[in-house]
Image 1 (cartoon, helix red, strand yellow):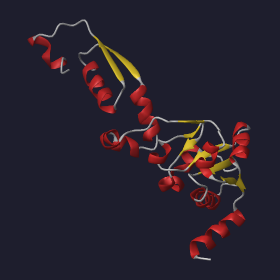
Image 2: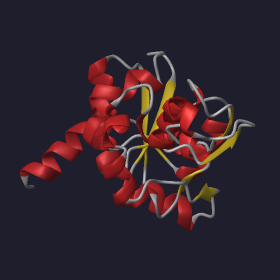
Image 3: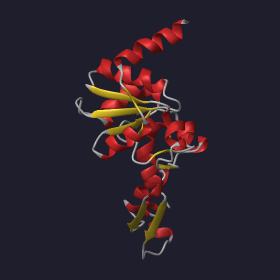
Image 4: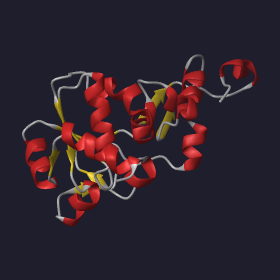
Length: 193
């Protein structure tokens, strides 16, 4: 047995594996389904209601989404191997009730369990909003919400103009502006839009 297989065998002794059907039932009863695949994989579909958190930063960011260490967490990857490693990491962080979904998303999908095609940022948006994505309280999830938001600014002069510019820069999906003022030379300092 090679080192990789030996390591997987050791983890399987510590981490319970459950079937996708069991995971679906447990999730319906309040357990958290955690999809640890990367965004390019998640773009192909993810279980409905799953928390999507790529493996790369899992240990550094998991407490933002799952602050309760006693919460039952069902970890899923594409085939059921990376989820074992992720589940072990969660145990080492102090999470008490962690399982790995055997067969991963491939098996979940093959068994006909519900999944969705979640909205994700394309490469251009990831570059444009990269600073927002680094902010713990925004991230990709928050940026997607901003891009779906609709805001109406009442007044484009004074503070309305910079507010509208900052909203546009954040990636607000729809920005409307209502203003009754007439732009002329006497008020250009207030009409920077």
